[in-house]
Image (tube, rainbow, N blue to C red; front, side, top):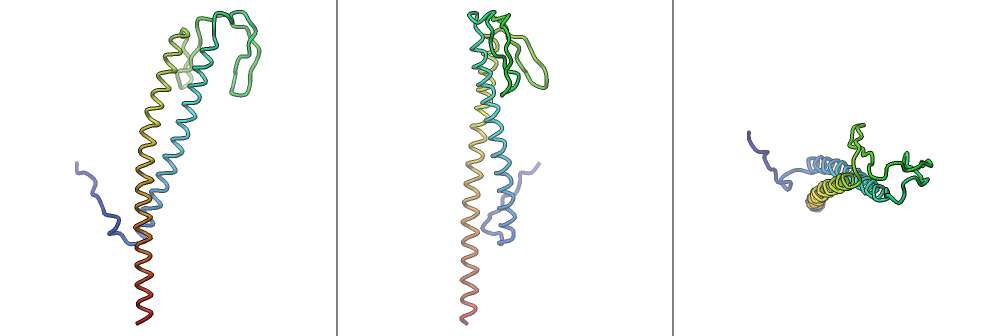
Length: 154
């Protein structure tokens, strides 16, 4: 299988450069949206980790507020202070000890952080490419304007 052919953007004309710019803007928008979604997932896992830390033997049989959603809590009693139910994705829940749940969420946070770091690097490279592309476009527009100015003087 052959590798993709590289094209020097300086060799492209303005309409082609505009198309490349539009494509880069779309890619950047998609990557930025993905980055925000990963940040939200990371925040969710951190909240889950904090919630697991609040499940302590001291709180057994005490009335506590149980989160049903991010904004809805109901009063309840903590019957089992050693185990929690963990959402492992796609509608599946697993009973885990507090220690296992903390390890689970810690590994999820680390995994998402790795993806965030890689994505941030990709976004930075795309932004660098965009900057270069804009500079090439501006140089071509200036050259075109100067060419038209010289043609009018002649």
